[in-house]
Image (cartoon, rainbow, N blue to C red):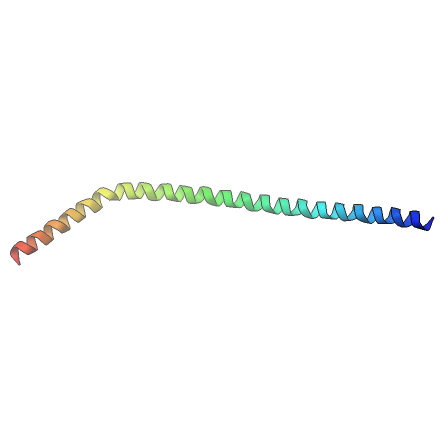
Length: 82
């Protein structure tokens, strides 16, 4: 009778360990899922920022090119005068 009780208790303890492990895994899965959600939101924000920066770059590019041309012409004029 004592051995059978010990085997039953061992099975119960083993089953409880499996349940506890499963609960820990589920908790970790939920934590990772939450982290993934946060990272996806951050990625969306970064992609939106990149788009805004590209738009600003495209707007400023002609002005930068014009300023570079003017600077080049000014250096050329200085060389002629100087």
